[in-house]
Amino acid sequence: MAYDNNRLLLELEKIRRDVNREVIHGEIPELSLADIEPIIRMVSKVRLAYIREFLDIARLDDQLPSGHQVEMLKELRLTYDELVAAADAMETAIQRGYVDVRGVSD
Image (cartoon, rainbow, N blue to C red; front, side, top):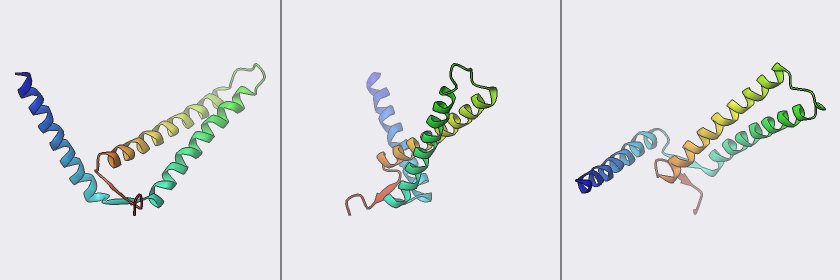
């Protein structure tokens, strides 16, 4: 019975891979390194903003951060987390062959 389950899981993985390639590649057939660099730069900038805000709060000399400062930090973290998740999803799509990247070994 385990053999049948393993076979089924392999088939499901193939279907998932094929469908993702079809759907994603149909809309985003190819990216270049020039397309990807602004994404990396954007994530880096929001990471900097998040860290900078945290450092600014830490320099308050033993004062607790205000509600506004905490909200700003939270907003930056949410933005950072969301952009990282999106960049990770793009990286996964590239790794799994759902999107082609040109310029890597051209």
